Image 1 (cartoon, one colour):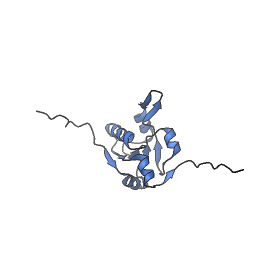
Image 2 (cartoon, helix red, strand yellow):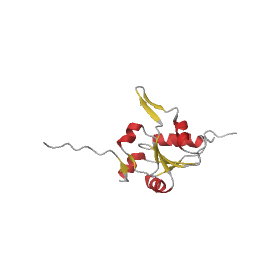
Image 3 (tube, one colour):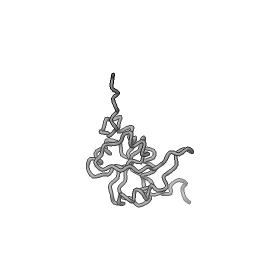
Length: 136
């Protein structure tokens, strides 16, 4: 007799908090930002090794999953690379991390809380400089 809900759904996603993610990013891990290009351009984690590949796109019908996400990641990363996956709040990155693990990536962690928690902790970010309006 089997139990309901105990089947393995693939490798388990490991979520790390932003403090742990910061330490990993500063050492050996690549930061994979899965937010949209527009979100990324407004500000992102300041990391030496950072890649932006959107997991979802905004469309007039709402958000849809990027059908080329895995192919795009595979074009710039090896399955053995150490990755920290982040998004705005930690939801998209959770799904993206699960997809990457299911694809055979070996060392992928989700950054819980996402960019919002990163900023809340006052960790370094790269953002466009706000233009100052000149007083005439």
